[in-house]
Length: 417
Image (cartoon, rainbow, N blue to C red):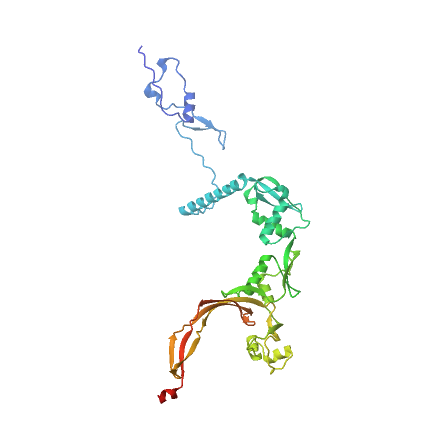
């Protein structure tokens, strides 16, 4: 008997479930002779018809083994409404993605900077209540923080400060974020708003009467400058003062005192016109009309205030009372001016009997000289008061006299000859 070669293994993909069932039902030959040939192995194996119960009777229903099982149709599903799809342009998606990324990056960065990068700080308490934190400062002495606050307020306000019974303390604090810390200037602003303290204000008195209250001596200097600026611009002014009893006293008042005025308000207050009396000393050449025109008044008012008649004569050195509307603080300016004057030459004459009476013989030509004079002038509100005072007179060039000979012989004697 010829021995057949064994069949090659099947390299096809694994069969479906129905093929596995077929192999299970196919009998395995006991000897190699009983094995089917290669062409027979590829043929489908016939199965016995399967029986299934019938709904109409007990008679089984048979179907061929090679016939495929009919597909059972599922019951129809309920019809759904079609979905409406929104079409978004690609550039919108890109922009939205960029915005989301930037927002997320900003939030994360802010969180890192605000919370991770925290530092040790100084906590400031006013009257036991925490008002803020400031950055660490090696020069800051926590034990004397109250004195530190006073020094800062005095530099800022330009005058002395008294905190009274208010307590200001400072201690160290850990892990304070930058966004929770205040700057030095902001912290002192908060302290100034939280407490009531006293400052050394300047009270201005004119002729013994209180006029105004200002914050610091710097405001007083500004008031003096503004009142005298119009009269002290001339280069020959050497002194400026007020022609009144001007006094400044220090007074401690509350920082929020409504009576504290600024420089502009005080200047307008002190520059107001009031009725004032001045004593004028008559100089050479003065008349009532001339004096009245100089001081913007009338001769009748001067005569009435001085107790004289209008047509009375004036004597040098006489005292007159001038009652006019003048500023509350009259400004007195002292002017020193240097002027040059000519010293006229003199003529020296000698008589010559040999010359006739109408004849003149010039022996030496003369020349005028010059000198400089420094004078001091007093003005009140820009108006000259009194006569100038000569402080210094210096001769620059001496005058040279003119010398002439004048004939003294009568002309009749000359005619007889």
